[in-house]
Picture 1 (tube, rainbow, N blue to C red):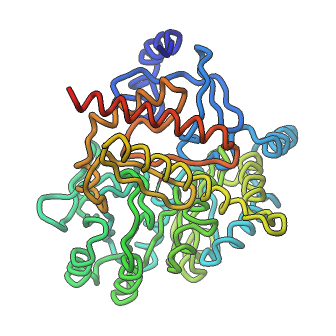
Picture 2 (picture 1 turned 90 degrees about the vertical axis):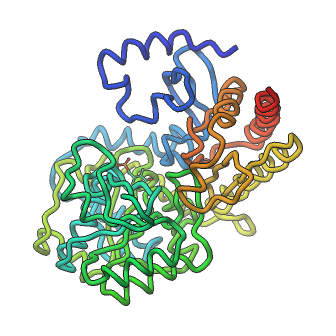
Picture 3 (picture 1 turned 135 degrees about the vertical axis):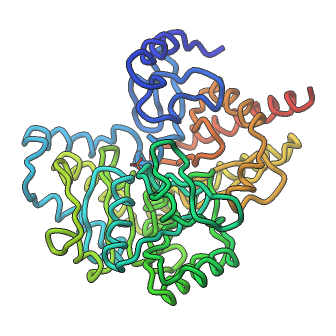
Length: 440
Ligand SMILES: *Cc1c(COP(=O)(O)O)cnc(C)c1O
């Protein structure tokens, strides 16, 4: 049995200090009915808790740690940067260097603004879209997460495609009513909304590869439909690639699916484990951002040299030319991910457990469901009890996964063949545990 005694004590104490004992809700492990391990350190693909347990980490701080934890190049650059001072609140060459790297991979981002979190990026992009179009309403898809700004903490009202209702106390009805929610991957629903409200819509915001209801892929042609509808109605198309950026492919979903959005939000990987996010896009639109234009947005620590350094070093590793004949970094990640995805699929099948395993580059996810999963409703129908049993069995075996099947799991460049072998052996035990549980 996994010994989590010290973590349990630490969690009890943390609950007296922070709401629910954490600084972000999903870390509390509430959905898997156990205490979270408290982490002491991490290196490469492995993470270590305060009780001395060691795990293979597929959370990667929820995506950013794509080159592995404490990568020597990133650490060395950060040490040197820290000695030069961590923030000046003044322009630096590092900001231009990171912006340049981002533009080289995301050519649709003609101008880039750095911020500190994905939440800030999407919130600012939407304000910009409203300011640029002089329209008030936003369309978002049910099950897509874009951070916790008021206008995006909105659930569907009754009916298929409706004006939103607050999904959290504290969000005003007036704010929620400016957001229209539509099921993901439903061409008819979004077409109907745009036909009816198109002239009032500032932007459609979408996770072009959805990673926050578990991993759900866009159906063929779906993103193209969004591009055409926004063009037709003079609304902006915002790709929230905070998670799928540098993962669905190096150039994100926009490169993988060949769609050019008006605005893009990046986060997670772009900061290499430090708090960085960015929004950017069409030059004429981005020129509306202050001080170039009238739409206000600012940040005391935005673009600070420490954070820029972590982003630059991480993106340098990702964009490095491969040895001749070798696949590039993201391709290698994708191949490793595929091995795990196929391994999970085969082992589930052998155990007679119905699952849907999805992959986009170095992102993957598994639903305990016998039905195809393509939107929030089909994701939510997956078997949560089976997931809990599987999750705890994996943790016992030293495999650290996101504590919910409605999250995505991530491969890093530091994961070794031995890690993957161990993961698949654990998966087999996990499926056996689920089988036993279902037999009861
Ligand atoms: C994580 C995430 C966000 C929010 O980013 P934070 O840095 O947590 O504020 C926004 N959009 C998507 C798609 C995300 O995955």
